[in-house]
Amino acid sequence: MGDICEFTTWPKHQNLFYKISSNALVFNIKGERNAAIGLAKNPGECEYWVLIGVDQQCWIKKNNGRCCCTVSTQNIISRNKYKKFWIMLKKGEILLGKSNKKTPILSEQTPLQNLQYVTFSVLGERNPVQWRLHLPPQIQKPTLVKFTGGEPQWIKADVQLPDGAIIGGHENGVLYIIRAPHRGSLTPGKFVPELGLGFVSWGGEMHEESDFEVLCGYNCTWVKTVGNEIPVGAVEGGYSEDGHEILYVGRALYDNYLIPGKVQPSHNCCYIPYQEKEIAVQTYEILVVPHSITHSANKYYVSGLGIRNYRPNYSYESDRSHEDSEDDEDNVINIF
Image 1 (cartoon, rainbow, N blue to C red):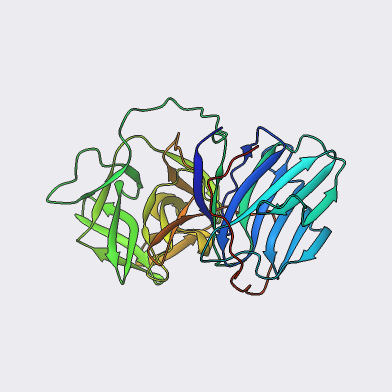
Image 2: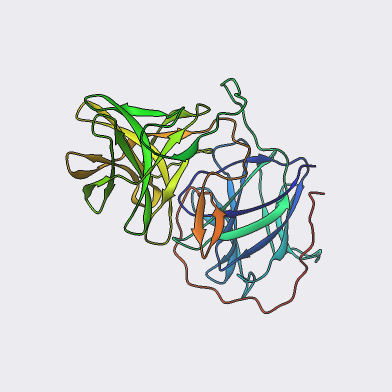
C-alpha cells in the first residue's frame, strides 16, 4: 500500500513518477490554484494532464497542450485546508471526481491502456500546492553501492580544515566547499587553503569570507545537469536573501578551472566566484547524495515552511483563484 505521503510541489523542477497499483487514486489538495496530475504509460513523459483549479476551471489535456474537456469550477481548492479528489481509469475513460461524490465532474475517453504511472505538479510561477495521499514506494534504480553514514554535513571552520572536508575542485590548487552568511543570504562558495579564506559570489561580484562552514562527508557524488534541472538528493547549501529560495552546491568548469559555487534554480544556472566576479554557468555539476529516500526533488522556504516541488512538461499562466468556502473532509486517503 505504501506510506501516507505529504509533500508540496513547486514549479520548474524535476517530476517524480510513481506506479499506481490499481485503476484509481484518491488524494487531498491544499493550495491557491493550478494543481496538476500527470498520467503516463512509462516514467518520463505524460500522455494526459488533469488540471484542477486552473483559471477557475478543471481540465483534462493531452501532453501536446490540446484540451480534451473542461468544466467551470469556482473555488474548488483552498490554500487554507485540504480538499479531497479522486481520479479513476475505467473502461477507456479518465474520470475526475470530488470528495465522496460518485458522479465525476470531468470525464474523457482515451484509447490508451496501462496509464499506470502518475506524477504531481503545479502550474504557474510561485504558487505551491500541498498534497496528501497514499503512494507506493518511489521508483528508483540505484547504480552505486550504498554507503553507511558519511552524509554531507556543514562544520564550522576553525584554525584548520575539519576532517573529511569535501574537495570541490581546483584553481591553482585544491578547492573545498564552504558556505557563508552574506547580505541576508547563506551562500555556498569555495575555500582556498593557500589564502585561508573563503569566497562566495553575490550581486555580480566575488566576496571574501572569513566566517564560514565547510562541507564534510563522503556519501555524495557529482551529477551533470543544466539550467534549473535539479536532481533528487541535491545537497542544499543555503538560501537566497530574497524569499529564502534554496541554493544547492554546484561546481562549473571555467577558464580550465573547476570551481565550486551556488546553484540558484530560479536563475537557471550555477554561480561561481572567480577573479573578483560572479560568473554564471548554465551547464554544470551539482552535488547529490545517492539513494536519497524522499518524495520530492527540492525544498523551498515559504513563510517558514519547508515545501517541495515538481515540474510539468508545459507552462500555463492563470489568474488567482479564490478560497474555497465549501467544507470538505480531511481524511486519511487510500488507493482503492
